[in-house]
Length: 597
Image 1 (cartoon, rainbow, N blue to C red):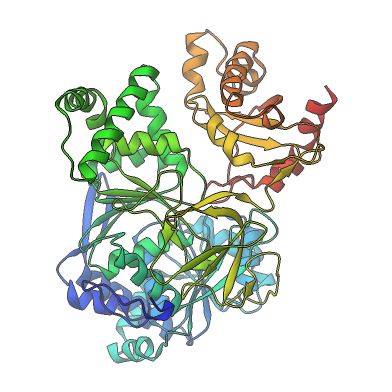
Image 2 (tube, rainbow, N blue to C red; image 1 turned 60 degrees about the horizontal axis):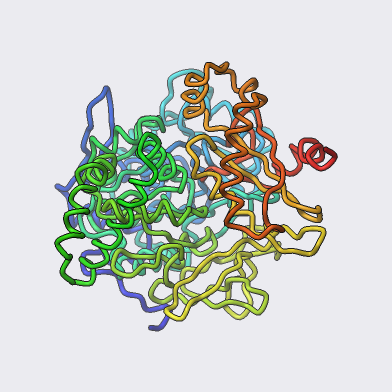
């Protein structure tokens, strides 16, 4: 298939850009529910027709505020309906969306808004406004600040309601002329990579990049017409953004989480979504939640039975009576509870952004919750390969999307080609990765393709640890094994140019409390990190994990941190990937102490 001709699905709006996607979706699905959100404990529905009115008013209001086509508008807000309204409004007014993570510090906000030369910033509330206000004198291009929730101190910022009011004073044609004038090659968004290394770089993604990747995903039915999506991922990240566009293009609905990550599982049970996009941490948490009190051997046996039965069913083959009887027991004791944790209607979940253990994927597949892995980067407009429930190989990240090509360079680097490849970095010619040579994007990731075209990611060029003895180690493997334990939150391997690898461990703050109570220990994290019983517990988990690896690959020593890694401290990206360079630098003394004995 020619890379540039992936056609939209039959149910699609058929929009030529992202700018005209929402108006076309509202025309086709006016009465359908587009948005669900929780207010005062109740779920509220907003129809496509109502969303169109809101977006049109904000879009016209931005035009009235002087926003010109091609100008950049930053969006500093958490995942909520207003993020979506503002995103579509900025695009349909012909401007370029520049998302900023709501967890960013004032300095990081300054970098993104300043580097992108944003003329306006839409802030969520007084807290986010304060960040921009703090660095405002360093943003010479910034003319306007809009605030969504104007409660509290917001200076001269324009409340979003006032923007809508101004928009009502302009003719609809002022808005329609703007979105009709946008072309496929115009920039749609500049997404700043969360950056596990160095300052974030702004990936310039054209309307055609995202329109094409939406088409590609529709061709393999990642989402189907009318599907309900539960969304908690940061919309400032390419992954959540793609899912939002897919849902709106197919007349689906998005249920936005309430803002409290502890409520994700209860809300899944209330909303009963068809589709869940996530990162591994949530699946690891649910896996721990469901399995922590069960008999490990019984669970292992149930997973084996579940895998066999589902594979036979998928192949259209008859399930032997004895196997079916074992399955029925596992279904009653385990599988139905797992599906229930996701609301009971989930057709598919997708995981990306970081590696996930194959055992966890097998557990969910056996339970009837297909968690499909995908792979891509901001530079590929989110995704380049994915698995589908009809075509998957657990442990791989799937096959290339229609119209996308993948090959492996001589040094093992994954190269990608297709209409979803970005336009380059904004005001940055950095060639450390993301270089495009002859149409091929150099990803910086290492991988392999099997005979059926499934891609496996084996590591990241910059993450490979080379020991003093010259052995190449991939940290993600043993880190994933350790994180499967209910007691461990994060594990980071260290050992470049060292005689052997060591690890930094953080305890799961919610789970370790149970261990502390059971053994009559202090519940203070700092004391638990030093407690001999806790060290013995972690040593046992490490010993089990080490059994899978050659002597030279085994982690010889570890240190337990007295706190978990967080985004706020700059140790994790917004999609909860570990910033390895930050950890190596910040905890250099702890690592050094492990080697000096």
